[in-house]
Image 1 (cartoon, rainbow, N blue to C red):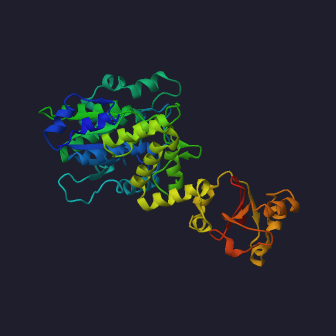
Image 2 (cartoon, rainbow, N blue to C red):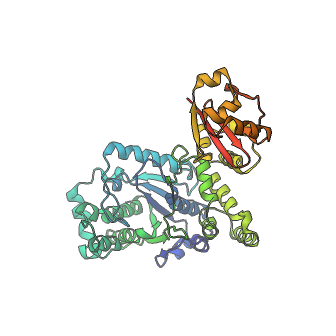
Image 3 (cartoon, one colour):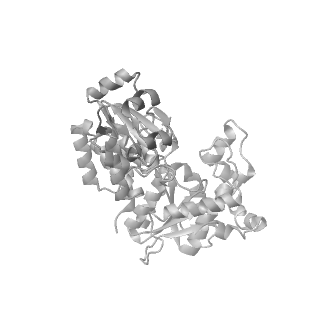
Length: 431
């Protein structure tokens, strides 16, 4: 059986690990769980690390459980938060739970018949019939307030600015801890993993497992570091917000570009965490990158591997093709294969103008388009000079004076790309 802890350590994915965890994992197939709170109907790349942890669990021969927090999501985890989260209504929560299940199913095979097949559970299933009095008697009496107050997630909220912590949030660690006990009892789950900010909640779970079992059963904990960027800014966000794992929230092109634009320092760290390439391959890539950083070997490989993992090889090829439109020798046909969203993202920030569909249906002279209809060039004279110099292209193909723009030139039936020289672009939008 492959050593899971050793595999995660060389990748820089171990922050804290409870004594005895590695020995337990080497002894036998160990059921391991990670929780996901349904704060949205999808997951973003910040959630990719816990997903990858579970994939490593399976690859090393252990049994992964993905827990979607339908119950804990009703409260909100205070860990790492300075203020209380807004509570979600049940309809929104159920919608989010289904969305997260769908995302997780792309990475873990919950229908497998293998002995270590992944399991998907929702803690609402066992918490919905648990009355407050029963919870207080069976769970609350096992853990003292002193123990709960000593947790960093609680201390930071009580000693910091803001309105402190509500009783609702204070109970979160008990509910998450009970999840561990339930999974231990019904699935023989012995290990919980999570981000380093979860250590307090996870160890409350190991304590509950021990105290709620008369024979003093053992349970284990491991956390990974929270992912950071070398410049100190928050990982997983771009100028437009979160980078999501669903193409309808973050296009594959934008997803690919996020990884491609990673700094050298971050790429060296991320390629170990976010890919399943082996140590020898990664070390060779790092060495190759050091010899010629301008080729961005690490960033390209990182972007390729993660885009394929989250989306598909076909989606990756399309994203590379879209990237080459700006920086490579693209053709008119390449442009026409882009969907509208990707087209606008590729040419984000490029000046735009609108033209009526009737104008282009009747055909419109290129000189009129370049000046009067768009203002791309300042005068008809400048437009004619540029055409004479052979520096004007429509949809990446050179045109001369006398060219008439028609509906045959439309990309996605709504765009035309004008270009002067190599770097001056203008987007014509048909309305």
